[in-house]
Image 1 (cartoon, rainbow, N blue to C red):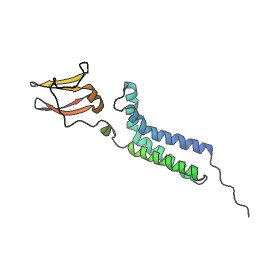
Image 2 (cartoon, rainbow, N blue to C red):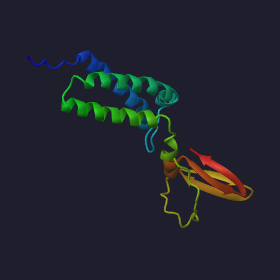
Image 3 (cartoon, rainbow, N blue to C red):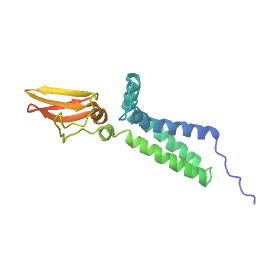
Image 4 (cartoon, rainbow, N blue to C red):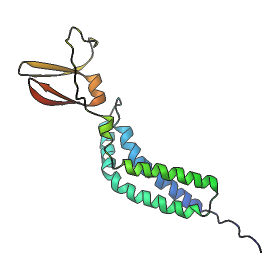
Length: 167
């Protein structure tokens, strides 16, 4: 009796799987890349990042399920190396689908709660460094833009009034 030749996987299925996987991964990584600390954030890019971020939880359900269905279809007709590729891709797709539902911006831009200040004379800031100032009831604070650009949020009290300084 002759052995059956192995079934060949369709290049179209591989292309559809690849595109679906890349879309799922991009739905997480694109907003994280655009809205990252220490980077210029153009208004149009921020708009696209936030629009993507809002739609990512629903979109990753569809693209993730499509990837899973395609991976299961392709699994039967490929060897060990392509199966390994399918597993790695599905791990990345699953990770991206989970991260699309988590507010990872809180990790990236965690607020400063324990604020410590120095007098202007003891400050190690350059003379030309930009600062944000808040003055209230005879009390004043200065927040270096270099620090604010990273954290974006500082919880503080000025003149006995709790404030949130943001950049």
